[in-house]
Image 1 (cartoon, rainbow, N blue to C red):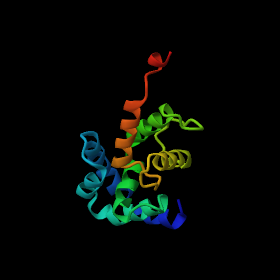
Image 2: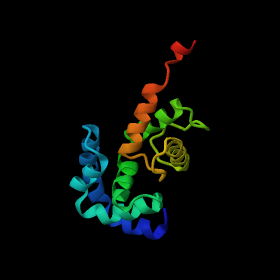
Image 3: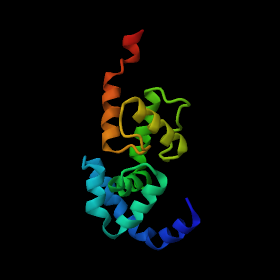
Image 4: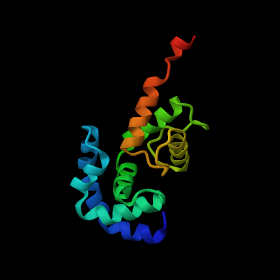
Length: 145
């Protein structure tokens, strides 16, 4: 992350920490990410938008705040994503560490391209749905033997 952006981020870290539990809860109960961020992030939206655009330059601008929030505040969702991509054959296999790093982003981009999704590197609601469908279609290891 660029130093100037980090400096902008510092004054609102405490506000972001206070918002994170509400965003995580909304995601946990199934509220779509974009809606959860809009409802809970309030005055953080411009900063989240800037961070999302920096991390995912090709993302649709309206999804940038949700992309930033989901990759910063929801390590459980990221671990699920990394595990799903590994089960589906991510090469090289991803560390399931809850960090949305460059390897995770690259694996998401490849998955999106292969499945004719918008290829922006962010695993939003549409990508998660496609991952769930791909996992549901994957034969069990025991059935393959």
